[in-house]
Length: 392
Image (cartoon, rainbow, N blue to C red; front, side, top):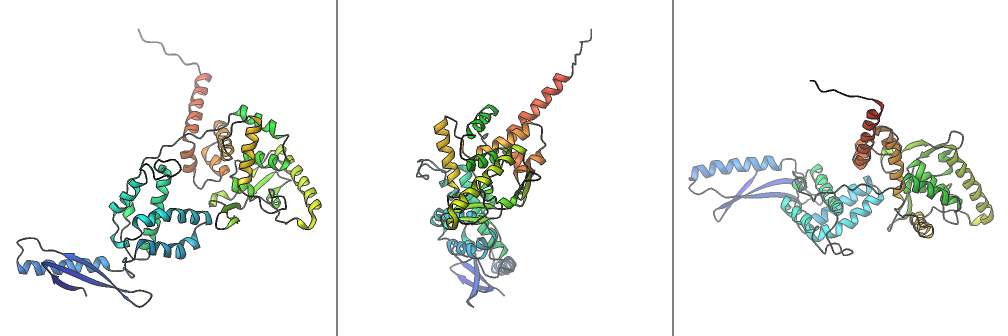
C-alpha cells in the first residue's frame, strides 16, 4: 500500500517496487499538490485517487529507475550488448557513450525526459563539436547517438524499470540522401584493363568486388572451401573485421540475408584458380612460417589480411595510374547500378547484395531505380508509334 506524508502544503506518495539484487527496498515517490480552494474532504478523496493511480503506474516496476544513466548503460553493455550485438557495434557504442555520459550520464533513468535528450541531440549539431572539421556532427552520426540512447531505455522498459522511452519524441536533423558516386562502365573497363598487370591477389580481390558486389569484410572472410570451382559459385559464410580492442577477428555476416551464394562468370573463376596456384607456391616457399587459415586473401605469412590493406593498395594504385579513387565500397555500388540498369528486379538485386530487406535496396538506390524506370518508359515510346489527330 502507498504511504502518504504531508509536507508544506504538498503530499508525498511513496510506493514499494520490491528489492534490488542487494536486498535493498526500491521506493518510487511522487509529489501531489492540491489545487487552490479545495476542501479538506475533496483533498482526501483526490489524494486517495492519486495514490491508487501512482500505485498502478508503479505496478510491475520491479527494480525501479532510480539509477544513473551511465551506471545502467554499463549494465546494458554487460547484460545485453556483449551477448547479443556484434563486436563492431559494441565498439561503436563505446565511442558514442563518451559524449552521452557527459551529457546525461549523471541523471537518473526515471528522471530523464524527452527534453533532456532533445537538448543533447541539438547540441551535437553545433559548430565545434566535430574536432576534425570544426562543424557539427553529421545527421547520420546523430541518428546513431539517438539509437544508442534509445536502445538502453528500451532495455530498461523490458526489465520493468521504467515505463516510457524519452527518445520516442526526439526530433532529429534531416538526413540528406546523396546519390553514391560510382564508376562509369568506361572507367570500370579501364580499371580492369590496368588490373591485369597487378599482383594476382589484388586481381582476385577487386574482380570479385566488381562482379559479386561483395562487402570488404565478406571478401576478406572468404576461404577456399567457399569457392565451388565446378559450378562457379561463391558462398558468403563469414566476414573478417577489425576493431582496436579485438584486432582482426572473424564474425558472422552483417545480416541473415548476407549469407548467400552468388554465381561468378568463368573469367572470374579462372583468376581465382590462378590466385590459388600462386598462393600454393608461397606456402611451399615459406614452409613452417605459413599460418594455415584457408583464406583467399592473407598477409605475407598466411594470417588474415588487415582490412585496411586493400583500401591502401587501391589508393596507391589510383594515384599511380591516374584512376579516380572512390574507395572500395564504390565497387559494390557499381555492381548494384549495373544490375538495376540492366532491368534486374529489386528483390533479385537485394538478394545478390545481401540486404536483409528489399526496402533497404530501394532506399539506397532510389535514384538509380528511378532512372531505370524512366528508360523503360522511353523504350516503350520508341517501340510504339502513336499519333492522335485533333477532332475538327
